Length: 85
Length: 110
Length: 79
Image (cartoon, rainbow over all chains, first blue to last red; front, side, top):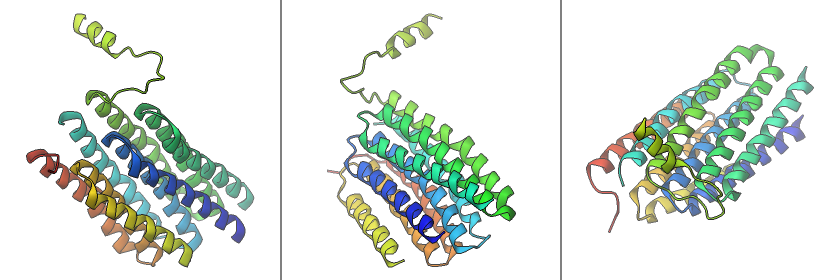
C-alpha cells in the first residue's frame, strides 16, 4: 500500500512540473491561462489523495472550496482576455 | 474492495499525467485547451471516485466534489478558448481548415 | 516528506521570480495565481487546513479578480 501511494504522488508531481514549464515558456497569455487551469484541476485531485493519506475527513472541505473559487478567478481572467488588449 | 479503488485511482492519475504532457507538447492554444480539459476532467473524476471507493464512509462527499468538477471545468475551458478566439490568437502553421470567417459571414446574413 | 516540500518550494520560487520579471502584467497576475496555489498545498502539508482554505479563497479568486479589474482601469504593459 505504501509503495503504491509513493508512485501516485511521484506521477502527479511530474505532471505538475510539466504544467509549470508550459506556464513559464508559453508565448501568449492564453497559453499561460490554460496551463494554470490544468494545474488547478490536478491540484484538486492531489488534495483529495493527500486527505486519504492523512486519514482526515475534514480535509476534503479544502478541495471543495478550492474548486469553487478557482472557477470564479478563471472566468474573470477570461472575460478580461476577451475584451481588451 | 480496496484493490478496486486503487486500480481506479491509478487509471485517473495516468490520465492526469497525460493531460499535463499534452499541455507541454501540443503546438497551439486550441489543441492545448482540448488536451487539458478532456484528460484532466476524466482524470480528476476517476481519482476522486477511487478515493471514495477505497474509504467507504467518504463516498457521498467525494461524489459531490467529483460532480462539481464535472460541471465547472468545461465551462472555464470554453470561456478561455472563446476569449483567445476573440483576441485573434493565430492557429499553428500545420492547421488544415479554419471556418470562423465563413461562419461570421453566415451569421451576419441570417 | 522533505523531498516533497523542497520540490514544491523550488517550483514556487520559480513562479515568483517569473512573476517579478514579466513585462506583460497579465502574465504576472497568472504567475502570482500559481504562487498562491502552491502556497495552499504547503499549508495543507503542514497540517493547517483552515489556513489553506483562507489562502485558497483569497489567493485564487479575490486577488486575481481585483488585479484584473485594476489592470483594466490602468494600462497593461510595463515600460
